[in-house]
Image (cartoon, rainbow, N blue to C red; front, side):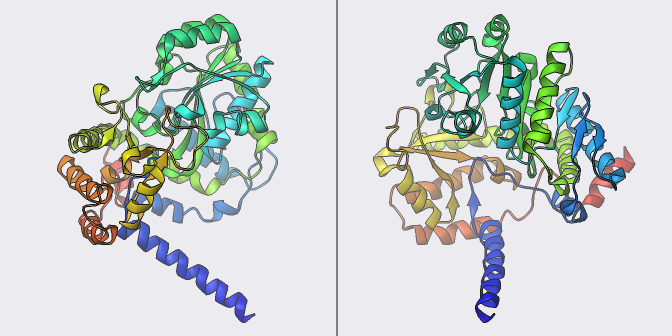
Length: 445
């Protein structure tokens, strides 16, 4: 019993230390991690009963609850319907499903549903080595779980993007049921508009994985997937979209063809891949949607500006930031090649020792058999932007990064500078400081 209790004490201690370490002592540059506002966190804390409830059943073509198999659903139904409607209005679509518990789950349900709707197991995807998420790949859920046949888009390494002309030839030859865009290393808008005609020619559905850029889309920057030809948008809700962890699928129920696809995707959600849909997050997703409606344009603009500022500053100071000729990025992230500084794995660990948190990342031209030590880093700026970093602060942060990369200072020395800098940014911007503040805004409007 004593050993058991000691483990509990260690668990509590580790949890408390984590909260202090990541929130107060580190600067977070992980491109896949968002930052929730105090209001969103408060909404989560007020939804604790929902965390233990079930709501299995079916939804309609508006994304509303149609049928449930449990009792006690009156307010759960209202919560899901209201949150769904907030998301639909934010993104200007007629259908959404929020029962997904992650972005990968959203991809699973979409890929499975569309392959059933088309009776076609072929899917054209961005190569994994060029920024696609593992869920798109033959080695991930698309191939190993769903058994889809992946055919790669042609990727232009110089442009860090899909080659639309050569990919059109691939699509015409392969005649896939699904064409997928989006990814994890995602610097520039994908050529949806250029490839929507060929998608229509072969009768393929177009799925756009917006997990990394959903907040930028909500803010009106980067690109508008629906107007450019996407049938469905899949996403997580906790990266540039600053909500709690979860997933969403968006679409427009505008034709019999889309009704068929939505019905298949809904079946892939329930009963095929979902039971408990983690209901406790839904009210907080709604508050995050309100924040993006009000603050999203400015937040998205500032996030991209900060990423571009960092790219330019690091490049001017001798670091190989990719795509200098294209302005480095049009998203929240930049890609940096640190091969001459012992590679991405070594540098990421050194920066972690300095309390600057980012991740190593495979670049398209790296050795695909040496994924553990790629030459790249992926650096995201959505967290620091929401904490109030401006262009001058980004340059100061880049100076700290440079001290570590170049070996000018030991990571332990830089760590003290990082902690001091973090103390200056202790408030979340572009959001509500409390749920009461959000409700008061609604009352005044």
